[in-house]
Image 1 (cartoon, rainbow, N blue to C red):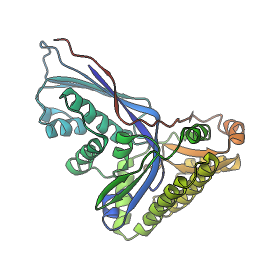
Image 2: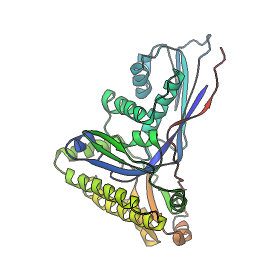
Image 3: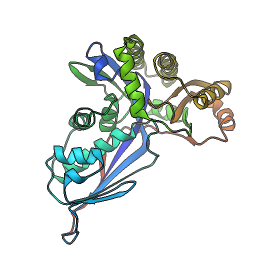
Length: 333
């Protein structure tokens, strides 16, 4: 049996600049971090007496004999890509609901590939994992979206990712332990509790790029690059936090110019946050709902807790680890 744990992420600034259509004409840059909210993928060899060859348990259970019979597009495409022939029992679960704007879909794909590669006895490095997940999602399945989430899930940690037609440059980890500890105490995720459709919003973003509005995304990428350069110049956690606050606010103001209209629920949360001590706020992800990220000074914590006492809150912690095997034992036959 193998269990793989893959982190979700917070993208602070630069989202949209990781679309192929953008960074083939300009560079893209995203700065973000993985957090302690995870997607789990597990597998075990099927019993010899099992009537099916493939069993997959997620929101439902599929039991089939041919890969092509699978309804789940990612599992079907991944097994086909790997020319999978061995009978297998696969399952997955998430710590958060689907479609919350924290990169869970790509975290699943990365985790699935990581698990299947280990089951075949091969180790795949983070870059190869990210590229393989991008191929499944963006090339084979032709799903709309960028390519930052796959890199976040594979590498893990607070990093900058620079995209261009020459490839992807992945930074080293940008924060020391004292800065991580500080940021862990000064960020929160507020649940909007509205349905979202990240794929539809990604299509809208792509259409806007076609219409020549990509200058706004270019500006967002440059905000990300400025944040990356600024953080590297100092080891002072407070100064790094101030840089992050400015970048998040600048990036959100740019995002408001080219995305679809923000819902009243999101506007209300952001306004309530700023009215009660938040230093920065933005909606996570591309679906028009999900989680609103708040950054704040530690002395504003109690005030914000009281303001959002009727909301569901997650207190994310930064993790420096990407997709990883957390349990493995030889299947009994």
